[in-house]
Image 1 (cartoon, rainbow, N blue to C red):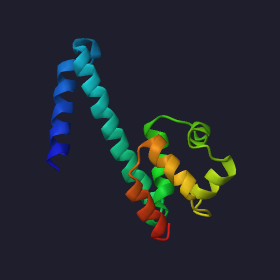
Image 2 (image 1 turned 60 degrees about the horizontal axis):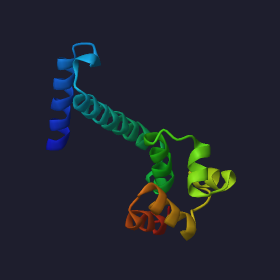
Image 3 (image 1 turned 60 degrees about the vertical axis):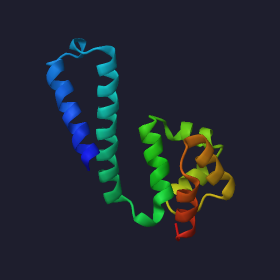
Length: 125
């Protein structure tokens, strides 16, 4: 929680310093601003997304969130994971589970914690 408050304070300070133009910020401040805004967008997206998808389909939610955060299209995500479009669609719809090959690909290519993936796969995902 304190990190969230700290991020909010930093964001407000940078916006105030910018005064309507990012040209007023140093290159370092621009990068920080971009990271902070990205976190806020991701947080808002997660909160909105969680309201629309059941908790039982956490791997699907994770895949969609990772695609959003990385600004990847569905096609790019499918290619990154080496998955067929049909299988990806079935996973997102909750009609199929990713096999161990895809769990490993999600872990290695997206950097998602393997324990999280296995736990959510075995919890009736």
